[in-house]
Amino acid sequence: MNNAFELSHILFLVVALSLSIASLIVIKLFCKSQNSKNIVINVVAVTLFATLIWNRLSVAILNENMHQLIPDSFCTISALLLSTLTLILFKNRNHKIFHCVVYIAFIGGLVTIIYPVPAFANTGTIFEQRTFSMLVFHTLMSFLAVLLIVTGEFKPNFRNWWCMLLGMCAYLTFGHFLAHAFNVDIQMEIYRPFVPNTILEWYVVGPLSLVIMLIISISCEYLPKLRKNSDEIPETESRWM
Image (cartoon, rainbow, N blue to C red; front, side):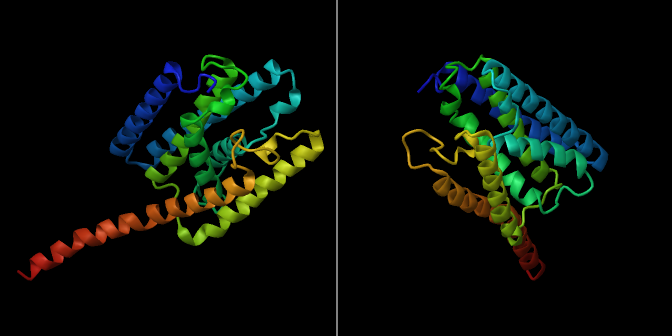
């Protein structure tokens, strides 16, 4: 498995998830004002952008291929979009474009840090620059996606499902462009499975991702409402007792 599930990776996964959860709890408890929320979100967005640049530079230089400076996967494009849009659209982080990018960033980031086998194919160790920077920016990408939801900056909404579909089409179109422009077959994993020797081609992963996005959006939108309604029922009954 290319060392992907050896001790170093497992330790990284445990530390990354623990720090992420602890940070979200602390932010939720102590960052009450809009100003404090903006500061935290901007710091995370800038850090994500910096780690993405670190990853692209390390990949391009060590592979001796300057074309790889260009974000050429679902995750690298999502990291670039999420970090820059979070900083640029600071007054409207619930813009329609976020209703695609946030979900892909969360799913792609979480899946990759849990199952980063393809990334270990050429390096074999977590401590190699390309692999470590990849794990770090995927962790920050998922963290920023959740942070936007936790702070209320981004509000999942099932009615914006079409943004997910349109965004997925845009990702695949850009991938086709890169593949033809640079004559390579790895961009967006369009011409090969996401995981070697499996059925996880883009036409399987794409619809599956859309279903997961819909489940996340529905859960985030309606579960709090159901909880609120269930809390109000006993209060109403107690008034009549």
